[in-house]
Length: 344
Image 1 (cartoon, rainbow, N blue to C red):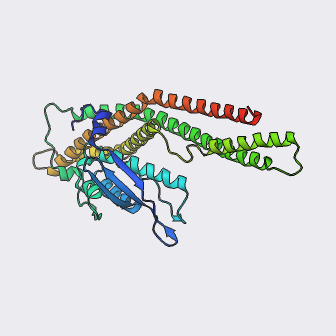
Image 2: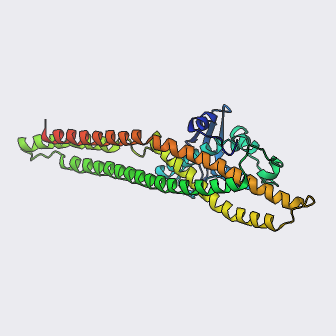
Image 3: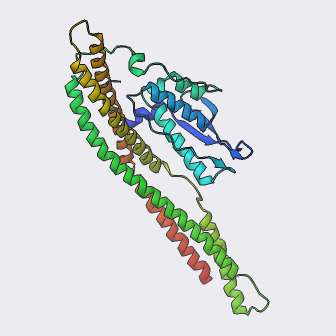
């Protein structure tokens, strides 16, 4: 992957499609733990994994690829008695996004440890003794490559642009989460409304014909409200929401990489400048090579983050349309509830 190569979301998506699904039965007598069915379209495999297996893979990749933007895993939480359905579903979705970003990465997708995670029955991964730069071997300079100064300038520019993109995407993700929360709150209110209407509709021996008519309408409305409140319960985000969240996590990982590299690049540049430059100074050459490698990797990671950000912005019209349709559906349901109470 060249440092100036254009990356598209379609290219990344074609690399692999990852699925992470909860195993229905949870293990453990008191402290329940969840297992996941992890499937890879590229390898044609489905394996069973625990959260700790994801942690193991993350630790190995983070140590092996210090110049790559690897997202943080969703935090672990002790699941007592099985945990809430919403928490488990959200963590499943977060693990699927994390593994998707890894499995579609132009470099990480070919990693042997990732293949073990996706294909082997048992996960046995050991932290590498060397990082990606050493494992890849000395990178010879190509006459068509950008100079270190050009890569440094491009890195600074890309860093600022993607910082702004991440801030905007993060805000969008927060808004989407708030909208989901309001939708769930409305469904909860509808279920409470149904319970209240059901209580009011309880027949009594002293009911007059008018009371009976009203209670019949209340019973119909209660049944409708309960059905309305149960629709799409604890359902996760749709495809457009996922694209925005995926882009937020990709650009966030890139920002973390930039912060880490900025400190390291400054130290490497200073050490390389202070080291002797004659032919018998392999340490100085190694420092300069590593510095150039880090810049090249940073530009590649910026191209990846930009591809995810662009695709999420392209999905915004469909996202807004889906929200409009959802609000329209809610309005229609309230209209139906009105007719049920009116007895029409």
